[in-house]
Length: 111
Image (cartoon, rainbow, N blue to C red; front, side, top):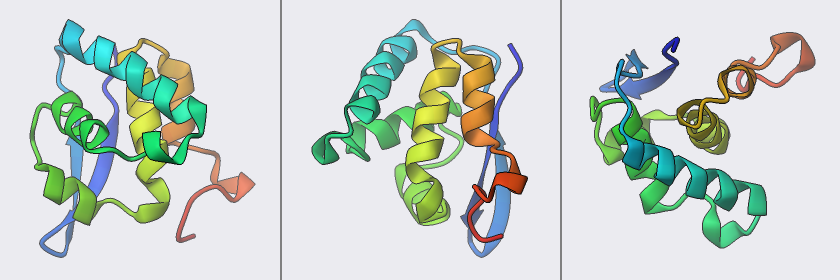
């Protein structure tokens, strides 16, 4: 499975993080719950502590929850969580589309 990556701003510098080669079955279960949470559009089920911990685990705990929250562009939070959940669930094409939208369609924040 091809890895996915995210960029976080840590200590004033952009750092790229890539998913590890192994993703545990527990993360699959967590990803299913998180995808369901986000698809529900219930504001209380979006951007939870569990989802932040999931992102850290999905990227091999190479960054902390605080580093994720402080380093991710606010406009990319839900997209990053949902895209990563889809990746863990094996929906690679969908995850890639969520995480890397076509900039021609005006979906990339800050551009």
